[in-house]
Length: 236
Length: 293
Image (cartoon, rainbow over all chains, first blue to last red):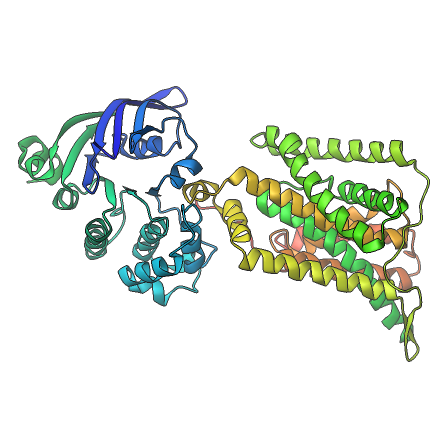
């Protein structure tokens, strides 16, 4: 059974409908990616899963329906969301940002260990732990955003365009760590990306989104070979 | 020279009270972007609650801490019942709601307790403290100490507790806070509760000086606005320092500039607000608001 199953998801901003019945699954322990151009509805899909926009349709997480529930409650079920724009608390220190990440945890136990393990994944954060998060570079803030979500001990990690605006080397580093987290801790990942090549290399399952609908889906390796996707999104 | 020194000390004492009310204003402003015009009346009402408890025979400190608890609950309820429905309304709507709250609290206090001034006890000994030729009122010194304790308590709360951290986060970035599992609405309500508590302390410290009546905070609220503006509406510590400065300036100007005296003292506060807003709108310790576009 899928960890996250979405059926017929619709969402709108004001009068404009952005999602027109989206279906997809995230398998437990897997990495699923949603690819698509700007404005296809990828970010809205993640926001809809987290109850941040008004939606209709079915969303089940771990077998129970979560549609219409408040964001704060979904976090408590173990859904960690690394939002578009990173959501950094710029006037708080790196360490305070991470403490906030642990705020919605089911259990207070093991927070110290988790601090150690995110500092091990992202050594640069350890060296900047007393610095205001607003003084970090873009790449460091993205790492902080991922680390903050990890402090929740999430079962599902939602990543919204972690590559946006970052140097290729930094992006590669972040993707490598996401894979490590997925393998070591069994955290399922739903990754939304414009950088199709990187995303397809990382993911097991992939979906292609266009104007608020899923238009193709399948194993990532298979979609990589798809001619239409190659021409439109991989550029060769 | 002794007169100057004495004026400074008593200025610091009243300044501490302005600072406490300013601190309450700043806390709500920081958390919710609302300037709570009813802050003074909330403090006045809390002081009447303390008076009621003492009249019922409770010892001073029991009534003091009892009042803090009731004020906290009252602040939370006001946010939930009165402010929450207009949370997303334009700023002017919220201002009008706060002014409405001010009028209601003032009238209700007058209706229950009448407008006749009542004496309010000080917890500090009536005997003044004499150092050389300078005489300090024990209540003045006590009020300064109490203000500093409140400030230290709030600093520790916001700096070291998880709840305090969550409240700061909720004020800065509500969307991200929700993604951390923080119930943002409740954080704002707790902010109002804490502000009501701080205001209650200020009310109980000022009432022995000005006597208890429903209008006792009217002037003090204006001094508190001057303090918060001077210190910076974005800086809690600045608000208290602003309060101390306003208290001292007010006293010295009142003593040495004869045409001002006691009658025009309040004008000094208003002039100060104007000067700060013209020359340094973010205040001495505040951050200028910068918005990315």
